Length: 319
Image (cartoon, rainbow, N blue to C red):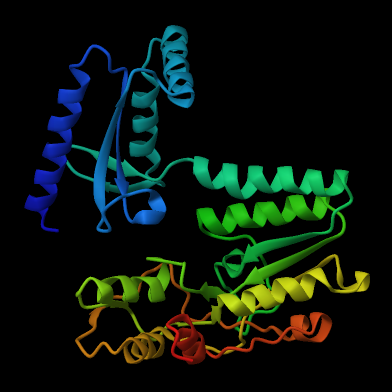
């Protein structure tokens, strides 16, 4: 969208927001983006929706009371203090101009509550009822990759994204709380229900909407693993003998494919013959992501069945 179009959308939001707020029955107004049937939307293209309700949600209410309490104690607006801090250290600033400042949050509430809080609950229940736990983790915990791939389970794990960090925190809780456990670190998985995410989802979404797919960089590599192989790895873990528990396993194909190769394969399988829009490589992507899955093969008997091309063919019912 152009800057002018973005301005029209924001002004429309502002107009609808202020209009709803004039109603004496309305205590809370929220505008959010929606997309597709899985999100409960009746139309498929991305769009914004507005809700206006007569009560203030509990988490918002707690935030309001916290802000009021801070002002009463310090005679300062807590949000102003936070902005001053952001301007001063600039570590979380994403963009700013004369009208506003955009920054990343201190912590992602949703990611923490799901990936950490939810995992803690499951780990405690598994221990309480003596249930073996197989934890679905991610290769993102190896980011940033500071050693030469292929990546094995001895590589340092910590994560450098909200997702990677919260999944690794989940790993820590599983190790400390639950017993017995197995941790599976997935490579870049794909499947029919994984929409709009990553290179594959991004390509498919734009092709289906009649747009040229976007390739960021092209030389960076990844290990693309089909969801049916992921399911097979979980089954292998569940039936593993007890001497194979208490271990971390990389789960992938062991096949390293560049983003450009993957994009061309997607176009070939889908029958797309148009152009590919190329942009600079994103800084969040590692130059090489190659998994060593020999431990899972040796100890769990797991070996990926689907190549990248055959996985895509199966995904589209062409295999």
